[in-house]
Image (cartoon, rainbow, N blue to C red):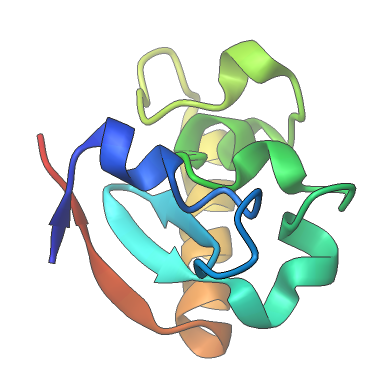
Amino acid sequence: MEFTAQQLSQYNGSDASNPIYVAIKGRVFDVTAGKSFYGPGGPYAMFAGKDASKALAKMSKNEEDVCASLDGLSEKEIGVLNDWEKKFEAKYPVVGRVAS
């Protein structure tokens, strides 16, 4: 399934009848099983319904870093992002991609 950024934003945990999705490098993961982390009030709620690639790479919770852009990331940060991607792959199902 392909999601626009706007469609993805509807899966941010604010509607309990919808799953919670987080995208990494354009791949959308269903993180509903981790709703205590990604749901409203959770420590990573700011990632829900968004592509959090840059924020994960930088280990940042700053709103301006919660985006798909990898511009300006160091080699080390890209490595951190790849590690996050592997963790998500092991834990959460992929449900689609973000339209480019």
